[in-house]
Length: 146
Image (cartoon, rainbow, N blue to C red; front, side, top):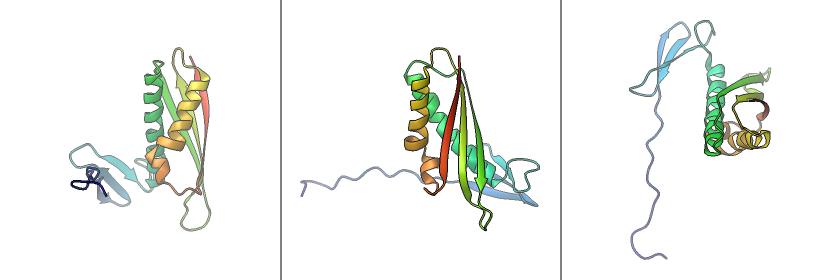
């Protein structure tokens, strides 16, 4: 048994999002005190809930990729992630498969390093991916240009 008071990890503040119904099937969602995102379940005035989830997945992974490449001193000039998903036909219509196409441009970025950055992000660091059901197959592809 260790001597002295028990050591515990510091408590992290919980994630809080306030979602406000705006009428019909439209909502605004925001962390308190910051700008909101508009979510439209009809998909007419903004992304729907599933597109919002896919956007969160892409944003989470892309953030890691940008940081990893910057640490290698080969920063991305541009980065785009096209996320294509298929859903099951039964209810609930959960995700079945996701393909993420990373389009990265930047001087001096070597394919092997960009691939490693994407691999680490999608399969190790991305908390959104880790929060999804493991049966959802998430694959990725890289398109790299100077």
